[in-house]
Image 1: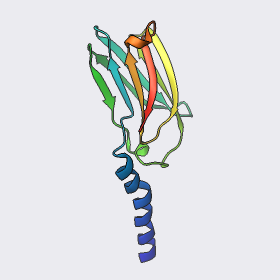
Image 2: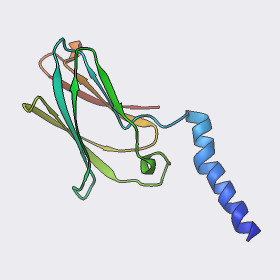
Image 3: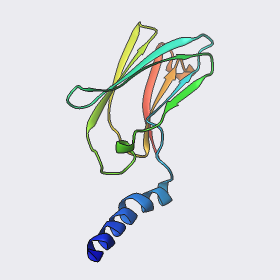
Image 4: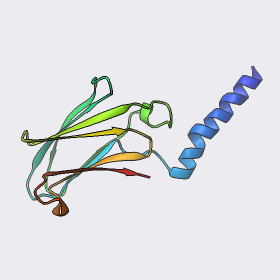
Length: 130
């Protein structure tokens, strides 16, 4: 019994504590920033590889406003769950973009509304990894 407890402690140390010490706490699931001067409504839907809904939320963002969503626990531990996900963003019920990714503890889907360097595109979607 003592040996099993010791192995569990080593496992926790190697796969949970050490990565947090090196990279810091997990980043948000997504981060959205409104660069426009007007108010916009953004619906964010997330689907897993079986097309089951994981998240469906709508945000109203004023000029310059930012929102983010904290990752659920299953995405905070490296290797706990490795599944492809699809983010679906609908802006003002007019523009829809999808973004496929694999969610890890230290990556964040970044969304910018009407950024200056994305002229002609209301949504700019990318990913940041720490």
